[in-house]
Length: 226
Image 1 (tube, rainbow, N blue to C red):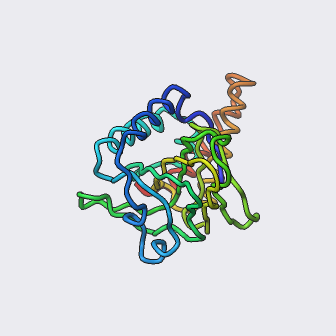
Image 2: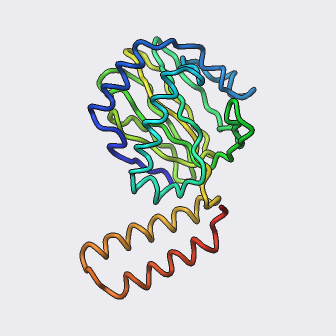
């Protein structure tokens, strides 16, 4: 499932993020790349342990906790602390696949990367190029979203970031370990949950919604790994 989630951050929050990031110290993005990805990665990044990255990361995690679409689609068990990158002057990230396991720095904890997320922090009109290109069984998808919007996609997907030929592309990126490991199962649960919500809105107190909710939770009970 490849899903756009609008308005994860408000315009005011994006402005606050950019003001903090503009004053921060940026380093070579290869520091968080695996051996293979390091050959393909050409960007800048906020240091993971920096105060700015920690503050902004916590704000993103709080926003995700309030976002019902994210919760329904990702069914998150663990979320990797958000990272932040910047592309300009022709920088890009060639085709790669994300590491299957990520170690949370400074802790003994690891997460399995079931889902990848990019939260855009630059207006599309502020830069040229820089599209996130995701390849899946349905073809190739170019993604360039408004600031504050997020794209969620399986971490097993091949993907790359096109060169930024003008301006600067700033974003946050992170990974999610889902309670439901298989993408096809998550997609089915998300579609079912969305249908139940719509049915409840249009036909309150309909017994079918109760029955479908039971089916949803029985499937989640069968497939969840917590």
